[in-house]
Amino acid sequence: MLLSIIQYTALLYAIASAPTARAIFDCNAIVDGASLNLTSVAGDHFVKLTRNTPPSMTTMTWGINLCAPLTINDQIAVNMQCNDGTQVCGVQTVALEGQDPVITQVIPVSGDLNGAIAQYEAHRLTGANSAQNSQAALQVRLTGGTWGEVSDMETNIDFVCDTALKDVTYDDDGNTIGLRVMGWDEKTLHLQWNTSAVCDQQLVQVQQATTQSTAWSVFKYILIAVLLVLVAYLAITACVNYSRGARGVDLLPSSQAIIDIPYVARDFVKKVGSGFSTNSSRDGYAVF
Image (cartoon, rainbow, N blue to C red; front, side):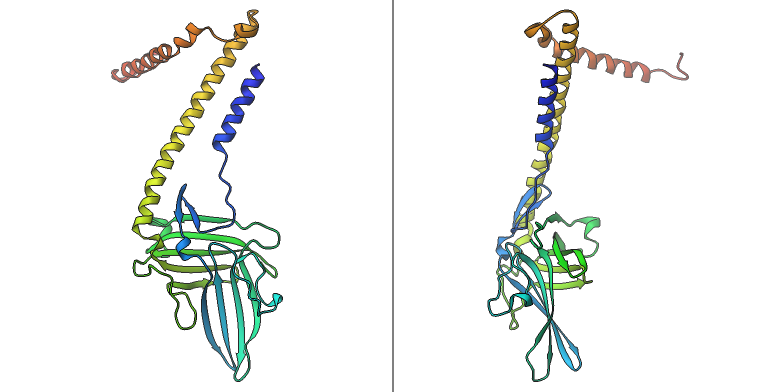
């Protein structure tokens, strides 16, 4: 019986403290335990960076889809684009004057690739953790990419509130307005995304939900502590009664003993409190 009580307590603790599994990012961010919906920026988005590399022109096109894998282009050979399941992909082309561009690099940075499920992290940027971009309100980190000998690739996206960008728009080259490449070191891609999706209203909702989540977490651990104390009390009482020859339901404490628990706890707190107050009133050295 004692063993079953301990096993039941361990099961309760495991259920209460089990972490929430995070699968591939789908535009529903979990931020500090609260939900923030980013479906307003769903779909394929692109940023093109062109450099003059005589005698050619080199263009790097970064594609990103937060909510789902990037769309496969049926007009391009499979080995010339990122695999199905990629959420962030870079394609580099080189063009000589008078000739069609040639694809020279295909870089799957993030997504469900090589049989591994991508993971994500999302958190608010405030104070010290927003040193790189003081305007950023939210950062999303996407993983899962492998490129040649480079593994553990990732994409860090800093979202900045911009009330003027309520709708997703594009420039003449097909670039998503508000989306910029801040850095790329052949392992980590750093993007900045200006959008109204992370402005005050949404962040206030996240903050309120976070407060509620924190209160629930405190209550959860208090409840676990109370359950552990109660189970320990029942276990010890059962052991004592067993040693005295009790069996069956007689192992449990009597109903009167259970009723007296609050009063015993109250008297114990009073005794501890009076002990502290007595010690604090003494001056000089204590007598041992």
